[in-house]
Length: 372
Image (cartoon, rainbow, N blue to C red; front, side, top):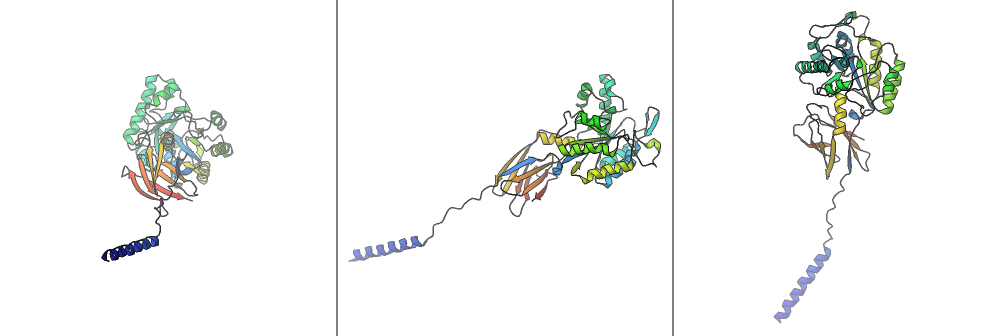
């Protein structure tokens, strides 16, 4: 009898367990959300601008400091001033029969502090193609050393050929000291015939430039501007002087533009989607853009970007603009990556984007902009 009661209890317990099991809902394993498919692209120009322009001045004449630079400063623009380093201490350049006043090293340092670039235009302004090789190299070296001593915080230095003239020999010598060098053409037809610059110059040691001389007009230059915007290229302008009708004649550079013409050029550039930056800044951006490799990985809402660059960030010291595009989403992001940055991790959830980490940890100048 006890045996039967014991089996009866077991049957009741088993029935209760089976009933409880039937009432427990099936629990499906958690589904991991799909990882975003992200594409990273280094943009041709900073902030995705349509084109780039560099305004350059040769010879370090006083009108550059008194007239040209202030107009740039008022518009938030920066230019390159190629200086004749061996003549600035004396403040005078005997340019044939003309005596030209030059700005000082103190004023050059001030221009650099205001964001402008100070580049080399040799030690004493000879035509380097007519010098013996050791004399030409001496001009390059002495000018390089003086700028390094006077303005030590600039990254890689750039150069402008006197009279816009160079050859294979002088370019090879310049490559030992400068990251880029500017040539030029005296008229718009010659400039266009020599070939305007698209994404990259054919020769970074003889970058084509448009010599902006008063013998031409704004209408003539408009053709070069249309070509620039059509091809999304790099326009380099070569100027020598600015005249407001009041500045002393001795302070003027060669073939100066009237200040009203100069203002109209600057205002045109500001109105267009053009990145206006010093010659060296654009040259450095091009080299970084064309030699940097990006690798993107995702982990949930986090995106990591590894930045592989062979360039020395102390020399190529400009940030890159990188666009992140998400498959199936109209959203995209722009990042400005500092030269020393090797890895950045972002949280791109609905509350993002937020920078989670960078390598190195103290990396400067990382900005994130969300674009819809």
